[in-house]
Image 1 (cartoon, rainbow, N blue to C red):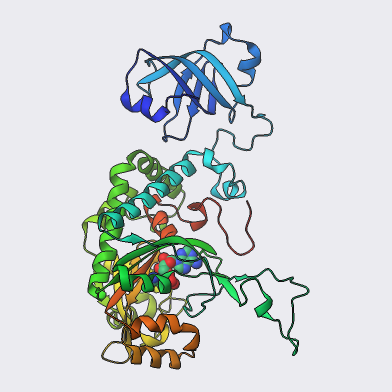
Image 2 (image 1 turned 180 degrees about the horizontal axis):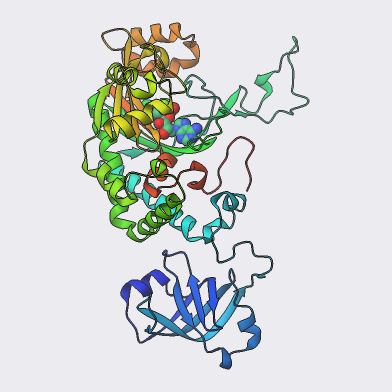
Length: 477
Ligand code: 4AD
Ligand code: MG
């Protein structure tokens, strides 16, 4: 079907020509005014019909949710709210929607209700705006790296390496659950499984990205990752998308610069290219927050917050400095934190991260040099032998949005770290080879894509920024 996109008709604002539009009916007023949306923009388009001269059978089927095609002249609009509209001469019903059964009535539905009908929620203003912005963010990320000459690397989804230790894994197998092949000792015989060994869904593409960075210098992955943690929070998914650049010859400072530049680039890209959707989401957030007590409301409207983040330098400080701040903080002294910070070495919880960002610095924060015992084996050991060259970026309202590090490039140090952490060398021979042959300083990080979508859209639950969320107890659709 040759059709005119609603976005283009509205943006051009021209009138006096014949057009064809197709989309889904949002509302139908006075048997005359159809508000039509085709997903090309947040705006609906007004199609005006002359119902007295139209087949009543067709008029009867113009209901909320139905898909229609409308043909007619684009004319200047008399009504307010739009510059042009269509004076339809022909309406074709493409797909009916029974008004007694269609779950999305033209009224406000709760986000919880819409999550239950995630297959239809794309048809709401909120979710169509979110998924257009999500798309633009993905595009901006590819553009950012492509413009810098990075190679987009597709790392495996099914993996037999389990040394990352980033989280609990999902087992991948074709073995019969009730009747797996067993060896002579009665143990499950994984050599008979599909891949001849135990395999899992990947928790991160980092280790493979490192291998490629040791030849291509600058690579990034952008793909789904899986964690079987039982975290039922508004920040965790069992299946989420991660962006993982890995760069040869970069140290931790270069790594922080790259991460800060990427985040600001994506935020600026959306402020520039997603204006209408952002404006809609900003109003949505203001209305939602009117229901909340003053102290729970955002300090700034959405676009102001984004601009603030894009225009200000992130605060950089060490874990040790952060622990000092937290130890002396009011909520710690008054035992308001669930986890009281007592000693150096404590892992930071989301309440601590959010205190630093939202209360203390009121800016995004990059924390570096964490105790080695709370970080992964591959992070580069600092000269103090106590901390590693790790970095976490903490964002207001989100907490950790990026985790990364300079990698341990020294073979002997890496081996002794692995021994300390009981990671068998044999399983990691391919990883160790990069340190044996032409090793070099390198660094990388992982950006939780949905966490950045949360931040930019101003939504508060991660289940609302991915089309079909997977979390404990839910894999619908
Ligand atoms: O800090 P993480 O676990 O780091 C890694 O996996 C490294 N291998 C990355 C690297 O250096 N290449 O995860 C990175 C980011 C977190 O900062 C967070 O934003 C996001 O991934 N993340 C999750 N997002 C949604 N749901 C979950 N369950 C997440 N777990 C981590
Ligand atoms: Mg992390």
